[in-house]
Image (cartoon, rainbow, N blue to C red; front, side):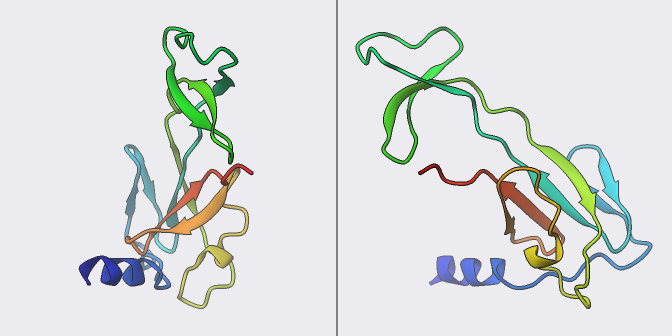
Length: 125
């Protein structure tokens, strides 16, 4: 029951930080009032592992890639980046629809923090 409540709360529209109140965003940014924090996450680089009996090269780990889950070797994912974004035409409630240009990659997703959104990589076919 508690898990269901957390999921429902995470889907509620957000209200931006009031004007003049700074909003911490990632390790170093502070967004201005009225802005929300957007975290851009990235997928690791992966190479198909053609010889499934061979070890992955140093610095990579075995994984499953793509929608079909073919064997691959993946490096570490790049560090996420953060940005402050002013919502567009939201009338006080911020949703991903108010942040049309926030994600350079992936899809916008709300978080449990009403002033924070995540751009997550899209699922592979």
